[in-house]
Structure formats: C-alpha cells, structure tokens
Length: 194
Image (cartoon, rainbow, N blue to C red; front, side):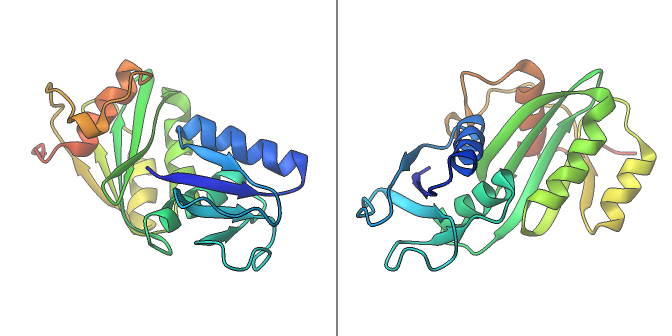
C-alpha cells in the first residue's frame, strides 16, 4: 500500500487519524499546510475540502477518523469508493474478522463473540462500497444478525474453514490466530452446503 499524507492542523484530529492509520498498519507522513506532497503519497487527508490545491486525491476529514481513513485508502487505489468488500468471519467465543476491499487486506482483528455482530453492523456503516459479501466459517451464528446483513443488501455465504497457508500478499506477523482464520475464510471459495 502506498503512503497517505495528513494535512490537519488540529492536534486532536491529527491524533485520531494517526491512531487509526497505525491500527490499520497504513504508512503515512505528516505534512504542513503548503508543503510539497512527495510522489510516494497516494492520497492526502485534509481538514477541509479544497484546502490544498494541487494535492493528489484530497480527502476532507468528515469528523470520523475511521471513515475518513477508509475513504483515503480507496482514493489511494484510484477509486472514489470501494467496489467490493469481502468480510471473513470466524465465529466463536473469540471471533476473528478480516476485511478485504477490492482485493487488498484492510484490517483483520479479534473481537469477543458477544460483540461480533455489532462489529459487522459497524463495517456496513464505515465502509463506503458498492457491495458487501460476508463469508462465515463454522461456528455459532446469530440468525437475526444474518437477516440484518441480508436486509442491508449484503451477500452472506457459509464457507469451509480452509487449513492452508495464506498467500504472501496477505501475511502479517501481528495477526492473531482467530483473525488469520477469518482471513482464510474471506479468501476461501469452498462453499459449505446447508
């Protein structure tokens, strides 16, 4: 992934953005108003739209650090919004969640099973995308939460858990076991019957 630039003067806003960028593992550089944007910076987050004329792919801060960073990531890929978002879920007491947007791993994390379906609702809110596919591995799922995903227009598939090595492009040293399983589920094409 290419670098993102941050041109936001407010310390609280800058802190929220840098914290989110670090959480997602996105490389970034801080810029001051008027600084030249280095060629390796694919998109910049600014305090207000139009604040930096000539900067590549300017994204205005919208008050929510995560949504702003996600919009900047899609801009760095040359898109106004993501096309297809695939979410792999490894349900359980400790649940893994992995999000791939337009073929690129954006985030993978572990959450308590009791909070899993709140996280899926949040993904639907935070990611600006044309379509969502939720792939569920083996484990207990909440039928009401599945219905909510479908009502929101998402495709829901049940897939086999696949015990294979992750492709090199998707390997991350920091990834916990449940998150890694969720990523394998997201990448799986082996549908489960029933």
